[in-house]
Amino acid sequence: MTQPFNQAKGTAIRRASRAGLVMLVLDVLLVAANLRAPITGLSPLIDDIRQATGIGNALAGLLTTLPLLAFAVFSLIAPKLARRIGIERTLYMGLILIAFGLIFRFLAPVWMLFVGTVFAGVGIAMGNVLLPGLIKRDFPDNVGIMMGAYAVVMNGIAALASGISVPLADELGLGWHGALSIWLLLTVVTLLIWIPQLRLQHKPSASASLNGKGMWRSSLAWQVTFFMGLQSLMFYTMIAWLPSILKVEGFSESTAGWLLSLMQFVSLPTSFLTPIIAGRFKGQRSLVTVIEIGLLISFLGLLIGNTWVSVISVLIFGFVGGASFSLATMFFVLRTKTSHQSAELSGMAQSIGYLLAAIGPTLIGLIHDITTSWSVPLILLVITAILFWLAGMGSGKNTYVE
Image (cartoon, rainbow, N blue to C red):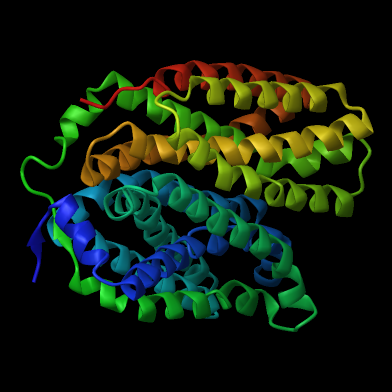
């Protein structure tokens, strides 16, 4: 039976046994493992899909944009749905949508590939928004560790998916259909293991969550939103265009691809450590400044164009990129007082953030086409990094969304 939300009571129920706590940790990490692989596993297979189906470059590009648009729209809906049926059931619904999306991708008609991508994007949006709130509620004494573990698992499986998609399709003979759908096994396991959590669902009381309109009128909420949005724009722009930038600088296509994968793997240590460090301080402005310095060095290094400087720049971006994402999600927890406020702020920030992420790569690509150079796009990324720092100075203050 659904119970009125009570954070202390909910935590006590979850911690009734050590086995129950271990199972909850496993459940959270399994959900996190489902939140990137269906997307990052798609990009390396775009050329195979285009050749096999005959779709043009525009439709092929839409496959990578659709999930981000789904994030932007359904990030706002997820907190409202959680207030009605509880976080647990909403997360479970998201996993079901991811499963259906992966099944649709396996089917032959090409239009099912687009439908499946949208379904998966909607399900992932629910997990993106609600997991930080659930962690805040059920792990109040270990928020930093759990947020770090969540980020590491999500980004680690994402990097793995990028690396093994082509071998799965070509060397194991699964084809692009099979390589895209292999992650269904992980989703099904998560669905089965999550079932016991459905017995412990919580709805917020009237006083537990900040009114949605109030959140959108909060200057602090907007600063956190722009911090999240600008880091998303920079990250997805680099994901989209870094190989092209590196090839212009003299790297082979294979080397550029490996550097992109390496960039994601080196983000894992800072993805884990940043929330732990952030949680130990009342304010996080110094952490924001360290990340900012790294971003500026990485973009300016790519602008110089020297081979070894570019390699170092990619590695630095990986380190600070992982830190910036983890800090952005940590702000959802640190700048709110309840788990449902955290979900509301997460929904607002990720909605705007992923909309910027969807626009960024297209805009940067257009500017490159106009200027026939990567210099102007990289200068714009430097400006974006400065705006990111300004938003971080506001987000890093020791205060709460009111």
